[in-house]
Image (cartoon, rainbow, N blue to C red; front, side, top):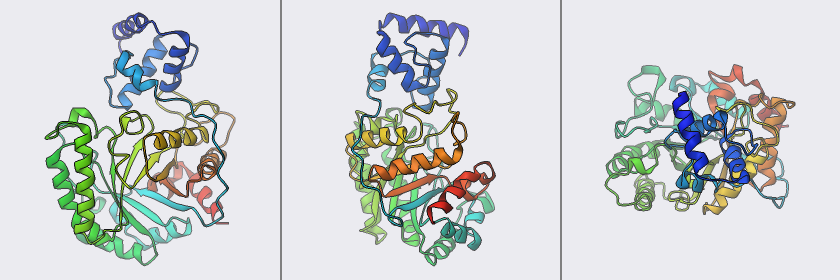
Length: 373
């Protein structure tokens, strides 16, 4: 932001007459120092948070923005659920490595060694722009890198099925009827080919009012999406497979205006406790830190009406918590998830655990191997 933009945002925010506790809430949610005072750093943090959450990144907190922010309560106390016995927790990953790497038998064997029994394949590009193509397989026409043919997906499915690794297919739809229709039509043969246990939709910056097309409301779009996904599973001969959504904690889908979350069979919430973030290092006592963040997002998912909760955890950026090791951070997040009674965990992502970025996060594979003992 320019100096002029920052000063304009400061002037605007001061005119809203928020009291100290409200300013602290804004700062805590957006990742700024919670001192209750307006300043350039607070405005900058707000703008970054707005950009990350699909809002106009101007650093201004008007009534509508504050209404969204005020919904992001600090996690309350929780009744501890009984510890899950070993072997009772399903461990999965989102698979975002290159196709030619994920198809290797050695890659699949490593998944088994790490105790990973489920892989969610990222099937198409993130449709964050209004001008994005309606439908396109991820990394299409890039040779060995992408899923540019049914043969590749079929070969992977055979390798994984022989090792009892279940597959989930993940897409990024927009609230656009034509795009949803095209997506589901394309997914039917792929769901059938992989014998997918779930059809997942990622609802982040792609699922917002700006992209609404051929529907009157987001609620109407969500109902159509749900029915279309159900029908796609039936057409693929998989009526017992599940529909699933995934999103992050600050999205409206886990706030006051859930549309997809409450309809689909389960919600995989992204409880990624990472540091640093765009706003800087995260204190260990922040609601974004390991343990606290999982409890906070679990509470939001319940309030949003999720029928079943899968916890998404981060396999990256665990070494940035001052005074705490990466090994401790990744384990605390896992332990809190199990303590909450959640028995289904999925890590972002395969790249960080055993793929192209694994050298930057060696603690992730170490953590998963320790869980097998």
